[in-house]
Amino acid sequence: MTFTEELISSQQGRLADLGYYAGRIDGIPAAATQNAMSRFKAAHGMRDRPYPGPLTMAALWSSAAKPAPIPQPLGHDPAWLTEARSLLGTREVPGAAHNPTIMSWAQGLDQWYLGDDTPWCGLFMAHIMSVGAPHEPQPFNRLGARNWMEYGVDALNGQDPLTADLPLGGGAVFWRTHPIRSWHGHVATITGQSETGVRVIGGNQSDNVTETWFDRDRLLGVRGPSGHVFVSAPRAATGRLSERED
Image 1 (cartoon, rainbow, N blue to C red):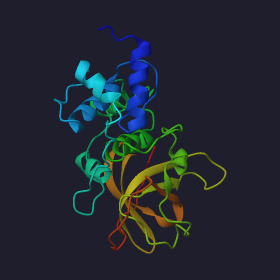
Image 2 (image 1 turned 45 degrees about the vertical axis):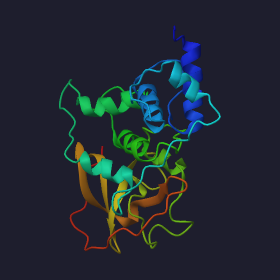
Image 3 (image 1 turned 135 degrees about the vertical axis):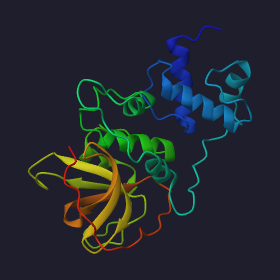
């Protein structure tokens, strides 16, 4: 069977409808499409190879096709926070070379990305959320940190982010340079809180994935995938604040 672009586009569309695929419908069988097909096959009792055969095709368009399961958190950590913790220490490569791990995130998302000398906090967030919440669309320029204010739902339910109880794993969006007169920002996932600080794991924090504190006064909002029930982030004394996120 020849898999034309039109056929691959229809597969992508069907996988997207079922919640397995969140990339572009472009007819290109890149990593995100193959990963989605593997997850679909595994959920239907088939070997999780990325290439569909006749049985897979029949199951894909069957009325009995199962929607993608929402990943279950380990302990209190949402699945995307577990992924974020596993990537601590991932660092961009100085000079003309690029860290293949960081570049693989873009490839897996079918995301245009020049290299790790381009700010990558948004790319890091897009990767961990695609792993931990593949059902939630990312229909915005996810490389722009402040654009993450468009993701999912308000995890604070309208409360003031400067005084609210912060959710573990929430997507924290911070301003850089100026809260209003600048487009610069930073996005990361919450691991702790204090009265004056927010502890997060994020990418491109001093050129690598680290866990560090931010001044709560810089917090613009907190977003999360629809349907997730958050628990409160642990409270602690504020430690040393982040010094650079560019």
